[in-house]
Image 1 (cartoon, helix red, strand yellow):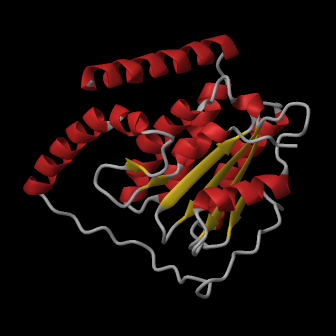
Image 2: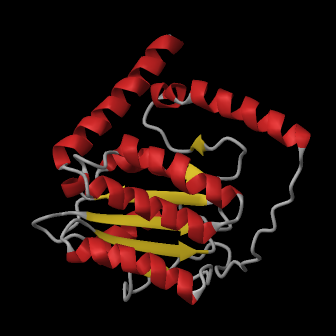
Length: 231
């Protein structure tokens, strides 16, 4: 069974704003950690937008839930369940091949679900329901990973099993969302964003586990230093 790392509460991200904001944090300190980086991003992007303005044409995806309706969980019959019809068949196939390769190598079992909206249900709760039903990664390895995307809500949630906690802790998954996925999503390049996220996950899982764990520790230390400088 896929036991979910509860620290993944930090991994719900909105890609509505110019500088992405972590929506769910366990403490005020977690939010402060990203303040300096966010302010720098805002200053840079503000200067860029002054010089040129580009209108992003986002896909028109109809909300398929009525008010107050809870989304029925889909069956995991492929690595990517695209209920929003966001990806082309070629894009779906290309990303699915990378996901299947990781599963065949025994490194992780990844499931991606794309919906228009989760309605009144928070995307974290929706992703948790998926994890409980799909049980990715198996009871022994517990190396499952779920990426849930609600396009119209502009929310992303990634949950990982305990078997991936050492190399893909919450701080690393948060970096993947902010630095790899969100920049593409802001440009309405959803396939590219998902592919970039999966590629980075694949890169980390192909590292020596000790090297990956050390990299995660170094990232944690840098963010702790940023928090210290804010105090």
